[in-house]
Image: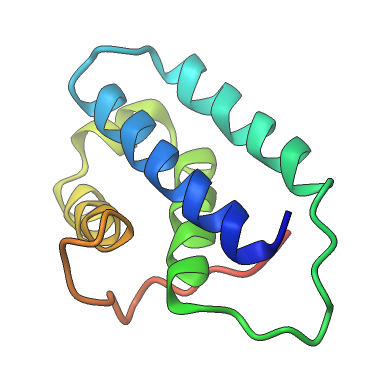
Length: 107
């Protein structure tokens, strides 16, 4: 699987999981499990170390990191964090502008 294919597949899943958590359709443990499953699947992708990041990939890794770094309560209740992540998710879903403050890196 290519990096581009991986990111395209996982970006929509990530958006689904984060929104489902915010809407209290899934517990935080499911979002955290998605984080670990994604990292495990990423280990099967063999990117060229010199290959450039796409904007979508940078936003994807940023959001994935944020969902793991912050507590469930912070993700749910912090209006600034939530607004930032909403902007990122909109972009990942193809509905928004590239968020300049979302710069993730590959694990």
